[in-house]
Length: 414
Image (cartoon, rainbow, N blue to C red; front, top):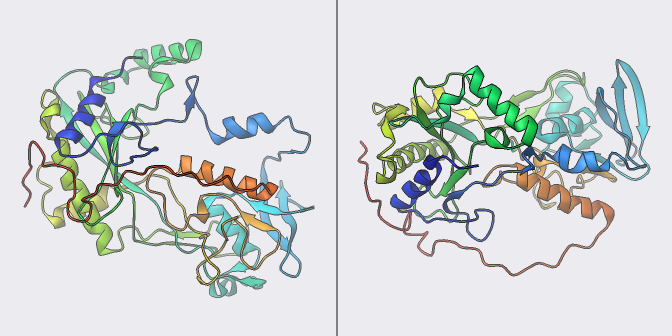
């Protein structure tokens, strides 16, 4: 499939703005602009379900239950012995021969631990659940990635906005069904960027996904005419949220508070993000396409204007994580050790994105799969692989400079 020329223009614009180019941001060098990776195989999204569960379904030692509500982990003398669950309202108990492993995600895993009597004392007392093991960090330390759509009108009729009519979507669908190729075989994020927002930051803290279209994720609210956009967001947030059950009823939804933009550091990172993004998208490489900024708009310049626009337009990137923090036993907020084992409870592990101590510096899909494979080896008792000595590129002037070089075109800000 021939790629839209806007993808390369975005990478070139990043270089013109003074940032490096990277061929593999998951390899030696994350910082810079380059092609974006996807978990796609044969034109189909290679989800964890497709890549792992489908191949394991034939195993005699695997039984998959659906339409099941897991209610809690059963404990005896601080040892996990199984789970209680319900099917169509009928309660059942499942005994564990070896271990109970929670993989319910950053919302479900802390919720299940709290329902099981494992968690902060006040949270459990407030809902009348007996405290079987006090663990203050369960449900705390919640983090997420946010992003905004930075949109521009396009001079040339080359964007995906022209593919939103029924005829075009039908043709794309037919090609994908018959051959698994074409525009239906990609998520359309074919180029990206990772940059540092200021000097003194060692690793990139701003991430870009470029899209040769101007529309929301769900395809609604598309720009009239042609446009393109970059999804921009701050990767390393300092704000922390929480997940707390507010009932002993396992079907009741927990209270989820992310505390987005709570800290001044996060708000300043977003101001920097908006200004730096605008500068990148106004480099010469995009001149032949740039028909003017649509969002945020040229009137969004001052700190107060940026703060207001970000609060009104920012969206979750659906990367909740860190609510069952991995750490050392002398940290009161630690929930699991480096093998996913719940501190103070035998035969119980948590293996999902909730165990990250801090949110990964990029999308969560790859790191979560990596973590799961690593911990699966621990469950099986396999020895860890020997550590490898590989090069990791870091800008040698990161303490003094925000980027490698001066931009070809500097955009002045108030």
